[in-house]
Amino acid sequence: MNAIMRFDETKHNAFQKIVARFLILDLWILMKLRRVFKACLKLLLPAVEILCVLGVGACILFAYTLMQIKVDVPAYSEGYNHGKIKPLRENLLSLTDASRIDASRMKKEFILLKNQAQSLEIMLRKMKSKFRSLQIHNEVKEDLADFASEAAGASILDTPDTQSFYEPAQSQITLFGIPLWSASYFTPRKIIQPWTQPGECWAFHGSKGKVEIALAYPAIIGRVTLEHIPASVSLTGKIDSAPKAFNLLGKSQDGYILIDKFVYNIRGSPSQTFQVNNKDVHKVPFNKVMLEILSNWGHPEYTCIYRFRVHGRIFQKSDRMGQAYKYLKTY
Image 1 (cartoon, rainbow, N blue to C red):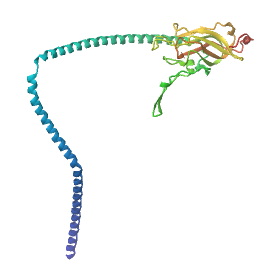
Image 2 (tube, helix red, strand yellow):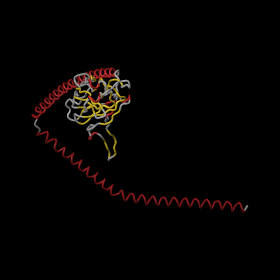
Image 3 (tube, rainbow, N blue to C red):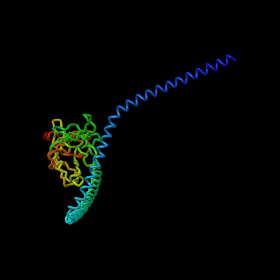
């Protein structure tokens, strides 16, 4: 029995100790909160005082404004000249008339813009029809064997004394020296590749340029084709960057031989095929040719070539070339 009473007393003492510890912890937390509250109050008290001063000043200013209104309104109403109403009314009427005039002008400008949009739509339709006819014309040209086609095995060897044209100011966009976008320009390879859109051409500086082409097979050349977009498809309505006079040269052992001279007409078909009239080269095979542009149609900065083709027949071993090279002058 005594043991049980001792156990209960021990348990009761332990519980009292736990409660006392919790009370001490609560008192400690309250003391800390009190100190924090005092510190915050010290920090906020100047701000509260400033706000109170500003509020009182605002109230005084508002009261002063109300007093001024009460004093000024009667004096203003007594000294007001009612004869001023008529000029004000006339001014309002003139403003109304001006707004009506502006509305009529805007209507006319809107009609003008609408007409311009319709004319642009008609122009785009014409451009589409011209472009379709150009594509059909290109399909017809595909019937002729093209020894200068990259797909058949031809390649660009060199562009002597000729530099591709591009605009440096628009060639690259950078951010803190890091390139974000670079403009893509077509290389000379483009002239022996198919094209489908305006702008898919090789452009070079000036009105004179050369490009050397290795043909897919040695060929006896009978015709050549030069292509450019029509003026109706051009966004500027002009194709003065098109080539004008050009030569075709063939590579021999001693140098280049002049095959023939041609002139591209911008008022003609976009794809123009020229017959080689130089009879001295009708039996001479060439595996390398050079397209030499001598002039363009007036563009001061660059010349564009969309496609160049070489037509003829493949040179066979059974063909008798004889001494044909001896009678040809090197260029």
